[in-house]
Length: 356
Image 1 (cartoon, helix red, strand yellow):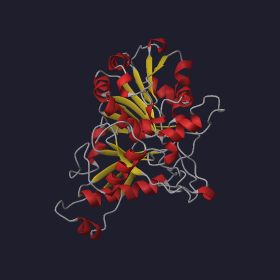
Image 2 (cartoon, one colour):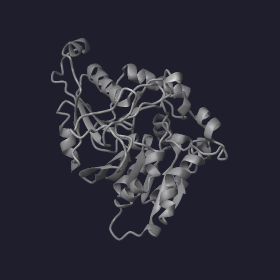
Image 3 (cartoon, one colour):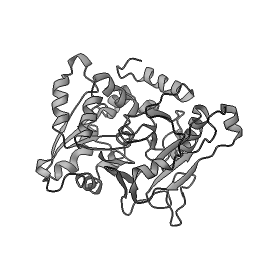
Image 4 (spheres, one colour):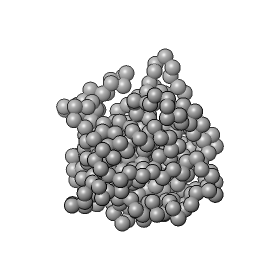
């Protein structure tokens, strides 16, 4: 597979340097005016405002940009053959940020997932930021339970393209005077990136619930290890970084002159107010569970801990997965735990049409 997975949606995909990195994944000699970019805005309910911000740089470079809108049309009225034709014609599949859980469930409900996998297997570039990064991984640290990302709320606030636009990323900002009560959840992705990696975008950011994503991500990984009895591996992508995959190889790309969580000594450095004090980077995290036969209480008493390393600037995907050890869960594993209960609740509150 080939792909670029950015820590932010609007701010990442609207940046010409990120755009250039995506186009660099194309076969040599491919001219921009020959490139078909297909935008999937399902995670922001096909709102034109977000589509325009995240595809404009491709259009500026002469690429042919189209979009596949499937969020708001009744399933019976969606022509799957037209969807298949659009996906099969794409050189780049670009997924915007927003509500990951809704988008992935919607694609399953409409039968698009086999078409997306077929695109990956023929060499189409998979790209996206925020939710558009999580969706390609096995699962992710997601703000899909934030009611402000639900379909009705988003369409009410941003569905009118004459509302003056939105300058910030689609992820929420933290206002200490209006702290929200929602919690992050681990939501399923498509599992196209090899291995049971949990992806956390905006790794160095604080959103409207007041929780630094890096810290909450650690708690999520620990909780999964305790409840599942398996080791856990995760990837934290800073807001201004991207993880780039070229077959078996990867590299880390960070936007220049932007803040991030990696200080000059290679340590995590974000202030309590959410201000990053270093440069953007990508982190690989793990929780190792040595004894497969332990109960949950025994694993708690074992004092499992999160270990983290700054992702090397380039290398082999297999080496990153090896960091997680040999006791990892299978891909697309559904665990009947507290997190899954939160996922089920979110699905009821923001239905995609998919039945469980």
